[in-house]
Image 1: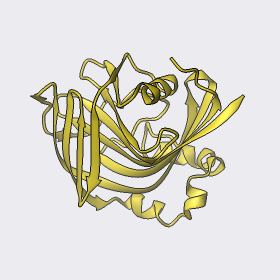
Image 2 (image 1 turned 180 degrees about the vertical axis):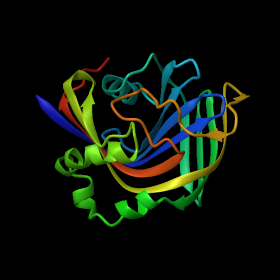
Image 3 (image 1 turned 135 degrees about the vertical axis):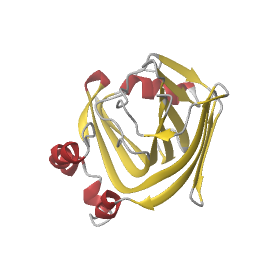
Image 4 (image 1 turned 90 degrees about the vertical axis):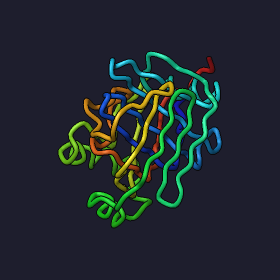
Length: 206
C-alpha cells in the first residue's frame, strides 16, 4: 500500500576544498518529529548517513543510497545568520549570506503551488536546465517518488568543516555532485527552505 511522507524544514549543501561534501537536513516537521540528519560524501566517494535514531536512519537509508549508516548524537541549529551542526565525526559552523536570485523568484510562487507534486513534476526540467544536476521530482529507492519544493534559498558565505577532528578545508563548490539520490543540491553552498514529499511503498523497519 502506497503512503506519503512529508518533511518540512531546511536543507544545507556544503562543499570543501578537500572534496568532502555534506548535505544536512534540519526538519521542523517530519513523521519522526523535529530532527536533523547529515549525508556526507568523502573525497573517496564513500557515502555516509549520520542519523540521530535507528527509526530515522532506517527510513532515510531505505530512500537514499549510502555505503554506511551511523547512528550518532546529532545537534543542529539555524538562527541569526548562523548554521551549526554537530553530528558524530562531522562538525560545521557556517555563516549565511544574502538571498539568491533563485530564492527571490521562488518566494513569488504561492507556497501551496510551489510544494505541490504536480507542479514540481512540471518544473523539474527547467530546474535541471538552470542548475545542472538538480531536479525537483524523480525516483527514489524502493519504487518511491520524491519531490523537492523549494520556497527560499540563501547563500552560505563562510564555513569551517571538520571530519574526525581534521579540518576539511575552505568552503568550496559542491563538485562533483553528491550521489545520494536522483538530485544533487545546487553546486554553490546554500541553505534552502524546502518541503520534501515522498510517495510509495511503506518502509519495512530494519
